[in-house]
Length: 114
Length: 114
Image (cartoon, rainbow over all chains, first blue to last red; front, side, top):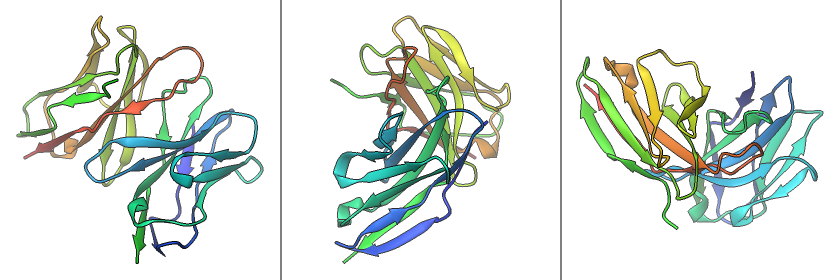
């Protein structure tokens, strides 16, 4: 079984500042890692994913994340945030054998202000 | 290409009743997964259907069931509703092959149990 920990429930940040949302996972098997974003009253949208290969993955809207196997982390970063980035962000993991079964973290609310 | 659609978008039921939610996947997608999202428990995997067969299952009681039709549309049913079943129910579709395929989420059905 896998588990995901998102330590920060809320992250306030000023517009154009950099941001990092933290995610740590636990698993005894090989995993895929994901970041999803959820805007109010909407479903989830995939930001980026790590399947294999390069540990630095780039996603949509200028986001990137780095897979660190030794620290079992997959932190999400953006060098300069915009007001429109205000949303809930979820880190998720699946084992490579059942990729459709996602285990989610509890989410981080990113609040961008002027 | 149309996205994942879920009907109805909002539903109010009373305790003890049963409810059926519907999910129409993206054309060509054969896998449909269901998730429950609540403030207390977060996002939790319910089950996945692929080619009309349940392929994966989460840890939910037998009151939660689902099925998939030959056109890949899926329904989930919750019998004997409890107050704790109030949640946003999300479905996600993917091509569903043996390798990783991106899941696309619908906007969800918000169920309120009174």
